[in-house]
Image (cartoon, rainbow, N blue to C red; front, side):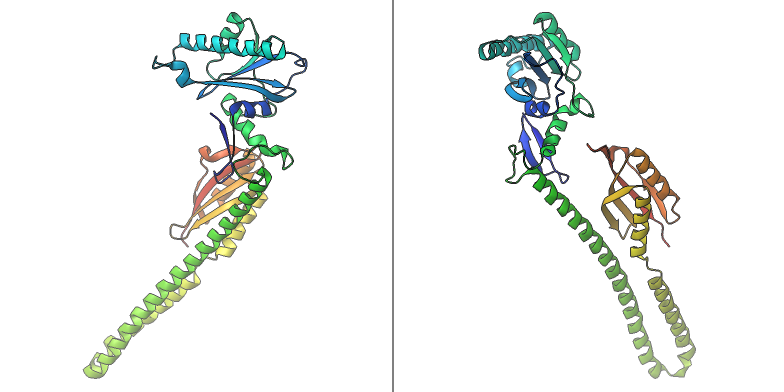
Length: 340
C-alpha cells in the first residue's frame, strides 16, 4: 500500500508508504518527549502500525485485509478486534525489545471505526488513547495520507526524498506548470486560427459557387438573346444581395481579441487568475480553469459573467471547486457566447 503524489496533469512524481505521509503532518505534542507512542492507521488496504522518534518515522508494520480475513471470506467485527489486539501486542513487544521501553500511548486514524479501535487499545491493552491531530488545515481523516504526500514539495530541492522521477519535486512542478502554460496558449491560437479558416473557407466556397453560376448564365444569354435580359437582371440583383450579405457576415465576425481581453478584465477585477481557457468556436462555448483568492471571489466572478449581455448559460459546477494548501480556490467555469 502507498500514497501517490501527482502533479496537476495527474502524472505520478512520487510514491511512499502511508506511515511516512502521516509522519510528515502529525502534530507533535509537548510532553511526548521520551514517551513511547504507537500510531494506528486503519486504511482501505489494511492496518498500519508505526512509531516515530524525534519527529521522524522509526518503525512501520503493515498487515493487509487479505491477510486478516484469510479463509474466512470477510472481516467480521470480532475478527477485526482480535487482529488489532494481536498485532498491536506484537508491535508493543518489539518496542520493549528494541527500545527498552513499553508503549504507554496510542494515537489512531480510523475513519468510521474510532469507537471500536479506541475500545481495543484502551480497554483490552490498557493504553492511553487519542485521535491523531494534523498540523495545519485539513479536509478530514480520509485525506490525512494524501495531504502528507502532497506536502513533500514543501521541503524544496534541499529535502531529497525518494521520487519516481530522476529530478526533484520543485523541478518537476516547474516543468509541469510550464507545459500547462504552453498548452493553454497553443489551444487558444489553434482555436482562433480554426475559426478564421472556417469563415474564410465558407466565404470562398459561397462566392465561387455563385461566380460559376453567373458564368453559365452569361454564356447562355448570348444564345438566348435579349428576351431573357430581365430575368438575368433579377439574378444579378440576387447575387449582389448575397455578396453584400456575405460582406456583412464577414464584418460581423467576432473580435476574439477584444472578447478575451474583456474576460481577462472581469477575472482580474475579482482577483481571479485564469490558468486554462478553451474556446469551442462552433458551439460558442468557453471553458476555463482558474484560481481565486477565496470562495467569495469565485461567486462574484460567476455573478459578473451572468450579468454580461453577450454571455449565457454560465455554469460553475460545485464538484469542480477545490481548495489548495495556500487557501486559494481552484475551480472550473463555462459559459456560452450569444450569437450576434
